[in-house]
Amino acid sequence: MRETVSIHRIVAEARELFRDRGYEGASMRDLADRVGLRPQSLYTRFASKESLVRAVLAMTLDDALADLPDPATDWRGAWRTLIGRIAKTFETRERCVGLHLAYGVTARTPDAQDAVRAFFVRLRDAMAGILDAGKVSEPASVAADTLAQLEGATLWITTEGNMAPLRHAVERALRVADPEGKPA
Amino acid sequence: MRETVSIHRIVAEARELFRDRGYEGASMRDLADRVGLRPQSLYTRFASKESLVRAVLAMTLDDALADLPDPATDWRGAWRTLIGRIAKTFETRERCVGLHLAYGVTARTPDAQDAVRAFFVRLRDAMAGILDAGKVSEPASVAADTLAQLEGATLWITTEGNMAPLRHAVERALRVADPEGKPA
DNA sequence: GTCTATACCCGGATAGAC
DNA sequence: GTCTATCCGGGTATAGAC
Image (cartoon, rainbow over all chains, first blue to last red):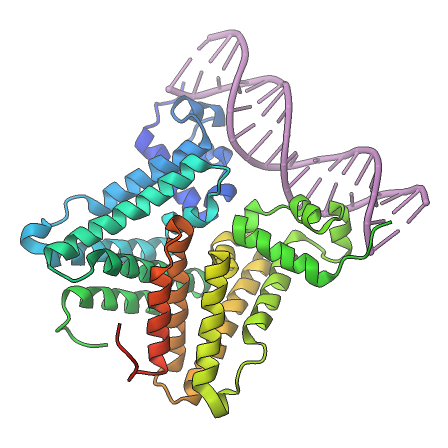
C-alpha cells in the first residue's frame, strides 16, 4: 500500500515533462514513474492527459504572480520581481513550459489550447497592469513585446546554452520601468 | 503504379508537419498520406524520421539565404531582405519550424538535435556577416538578439493570431541597419 | 486510492513481391 | 521505387479486485 501522492507533486512533475518533451512527447507512463504511481492511478485525479495542461499552467501562473509587491505603491518593484522570476525560471530550466505547450497543442486538444491562450493572456495582463500603474504608455503592447522577447531568448539557451540573449532581453525589459538607467 | 515523388516535395511536406505538430507529433504515416505514398516508401529516401529534420532545415536555410543582395555592396538591402523573409514566413505559417524543432528534439535524437543547432548557428552567422559588412558593432550578439526577438513574437501569433509583436520586432530589427529611421 | 491486467490504437520500421 | 502485409513497442484509457 503506497502513500497518497499530492496533486501538487503530480502537477509539478507533469510540468517538468511538458517543458522538456512537449505535449506529445510527454507520457502518462513517464509521469506515473516520476511520482511513483501506476499510470492508471493518475486518472483518479485527472480525467485525461489534456486536463493536466490547465493544471500545470495554473500552477505556473500562481508561482509567477504570488506575493508580488503591490503595483499601486511599488510598480517598479513589482515589475522587477516579475521579470526576474520569469528570467530565473528560463535560466534554471532552460526553456518555457508555456511556449512548448503553445507550439505543441492543436485543435485536437481544444481545452489545452484554450488553457495555453488563457495562461499567456493572464500573464500579459498582469504585466500590463503593473506598467499601467506606472503610467507607462501602451502597457498591453509593451507587456506583450517584453514577454515575447524573453520567450524568444530561450531559443539560444536550448540550442547552445547561451544565456546572453536572455540577459539582453532582461536589460531591455528593466529599462521599460527605468528609462534613465544605464544603457547597454 | 504511382508517379515518382520528388525529394523536394517530401521535405516540403515534412516541414509543414514538423512546424504544425513538432517532432513527436509528426508521423511518417501522415507524411506519407500528404505526398501520396505508402509509409514504407519514405524509407527508400530517408533512413529514419530523425534524418528528415536535417533535410527540412537545410531546405529552410537555403530558402532564407537564396539570392540575397551581396552584403559587400548592399548590406542594408541584404538585411532588409533577410528580415523580411523570416517575418513573412512567420506571418504566413504562424510559427517557426526551427523553434518547434529546437524545443522538440532531445538527446534521444542526437542527429536531429545537432541539425537544429547548426541551422540556427548558420542563420545567425549569415545575419552577423551582413551586419559585419555594415560595420555594426558586435554583429554576432546583435544577430542573435534580433533572431530571438523575431522568434519570440511567434508566441502571440500562435496563441492569439496577434501579429503586432512581430511587426514591432521587425521594426526594431530594421532599425539596427538604419538607426536614423523613424522611431516607433 | 492504488493495484493488476488489459483493451485498443497508433507509432516507427522491416520483409519480400512486383 | 512502390506496393501489401506485418512486427513490435508504446501510447491513452478502462475494468474490476483489494
